[in-house]
Structure formats: structure tokens, C-alpha cells
Amino acid sequence: MPITTLTAQDLIRFEEDIAAEFNGAKIRAPVHLYSGCEEQMLKVFDKVQPDDWVMCSWRSHYQCLLKGVPPAEVKDEIMAGRSITLCFAAQRIFSSAIVTGILPIAVGIALGIKRRGGAEKVWCFLGEMTGETGAAYECIKYATNFDLPIHFIVEDNGKSVC
Image (cartoon, rainbow, N blue to C red; front, side, top):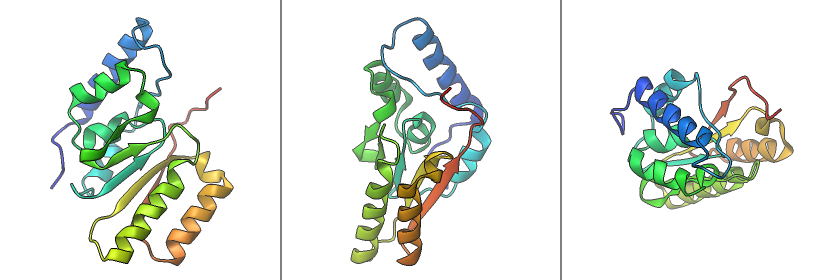
């Protein structure tokens, strides 16, 4: 059973609102928007459970919303300039603006779950270029070799920073 009842259209409307706030110069910090991957995100989050951990990079608006963080809380954090470092402990969602920064944290959480015999999983989202780094390779290799309860989701929105 999904954590939230949000639809693709709800996600799109949220991002359109954030884009309007940013373009109106009301957000004075970096904002990385989603676009065009709503259906894929909904499919992933059909499998995410309330006790699971969600770890992301700087593009995490959809993950926060789909993990059950109320849209008003997500927007408040974005408006306060924390779009690229959204963290909501109650919903077990954390993000980092450091490229590859969240990967070893996600692996450490998965290792802790395995050691204590927990049932929850870690869902770690990373961009396709982050997936090309040595840090990503090492984290994925370690998680695979030790059969950790973690899923790595590589996102490719077809865009580059440039």
C-alpha cells in the first residue's frame, strides 16, 4: 500500500509552484526541479514502506512528498533555502547536496539494519553521473557483496548542469 495518495499531476503542480516562486525571486538558493519522471517515481514508491529509509541527492522534492512529508512542510524548507538538503527525520528521508555524499550514509544505515536484523530497507537515489563515480562503485559493490537491504535507483532526467 502506497505511503501517499499523491498523483503525477499533484507532483507536477508542486514543482510548477516552486518554479514560479524561484522565478519570482522568492527563493534565494539553488533549486533542482523534477520533470518528466513522475510515473517512474510513483512506481518506485509503490514499494517503499513507512519504516524504510529514503536517501537522496539535491533533487529530492518528489521523494519527500512521496515518503509522506506534507507539501506545506517541503515548501517551507525550500522557501527557507534548503531545497538541496531536505531532511525529515520523522519520515526517514535525508538528502545531501554533496555529490556522492549520501551514498556511504545509505550503505551504513543498510549495514546497521542488517546487523540488528531489521526488516526495513534503504532506497538510495542518485543521478546518472554520480553513478559513474568511484564512490558509487565502491558503495554499490560493498552493498552487493554483503547483501545489504538497499536499493540504488539511478535517475537520468536527460539534463546536465550545463
